[in-house]
Length: 404
Ligand SMILES: Cc1cc2nc3c(=O)[nH]c(=O)nc-3n(C[C@H](O)[C@H](O)[C@H](O)COP(=O)(O)O)c2cc1C
Image (tube, rainbow, N blue to C red; front, side, top):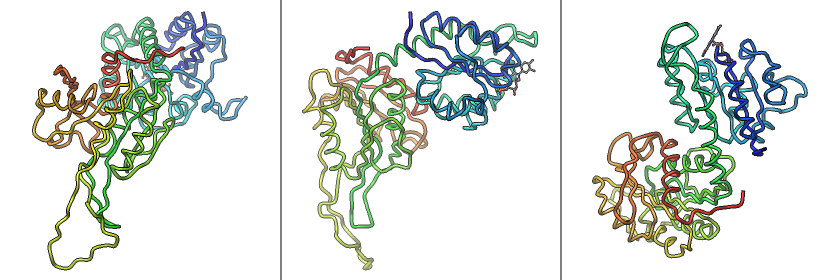
């Protein structure tokens, strides 16, 4: 039976390349349309004809092969998933560095759907700090690794580095496709970044939020096939392709954008660090230095989260973030979740240097209004974003079941 899913199977120059044909067979058995994209070195390890017989498609390899055109973009746009198995040390390095010197690596830069890598190599190569660093770079970006097995290697030695079994790889593909099927079309609204409040035309009150946590959530939701709207404060991160983006500056602008968007969404995650205070009367002209001290009078901004929760409709799920500087008391946080009317609160202690605001990683604790809590731990923001969406899914009783 056809699943209607298009899977790109990348094969690279490893001795295990022949086992990719078993993977192709299992994926075809699951009803997927499988297109093999092999590196030129991979073709030294298996006969092209075998790949073509298993998948029913020509094995693609050359970026400039005819029929030409921008084939890599077409393939990337049409695919539901890219699986690279086996992934060589060389390929992992090129992908981590963003090189695009053949069809497969060029595809990796163009693809928006999920990417899975199954490395295969000798143990000392797999454990080499360079390979581990490249794998970390990739998994921090949201790529999934299926770690190799321990067993007999091509050199005759026993060790860690054997390509994971075709069945384990097939199961991982099934799981990822199940998740993206489930989230496909779910409307997700995410706020990210800081807000800025004018003091005068050149100065503002801001905060240290980089927007990375919210942008990581946008990427994680998009890779699951969700329809994502991002309301972003001023950040230095490129806009994620595929999301509808509204750029705002002040807390007031963020509030109006979110209030307007919220009714058309199923899930709202407020990851933005919204200013609690604004200038009571921003100055029209720049204040010059006059040798005296300057006292600013601030007034409180509205609580956007509490406002959204008041307009929340049945089935909608609302998530807030809480940045604390005096440790995390889960009872206090649960009270805060109840007071704000959110379904789930994600708290971090931003007083610790190098974690949270402005950094690539975070340390989050999930708190529910009933007092239950779960320490998600310290990890890259992108990996935490995947964990957060999985935890939301478990707790969201009104999760929309959309026709597939
Ligand atoms: C017999 C043989 C077996 C190899 N097996 C592996 C392997 O299992 N894993 C790996 O990372 N590299 C392996 N290599 C080295 C790669 O083929 C080499 O790094 C190549 O540049 C990979 O190219 P690619 O990434 O474009 O496919 C092997 C080389 C030879 C000659």
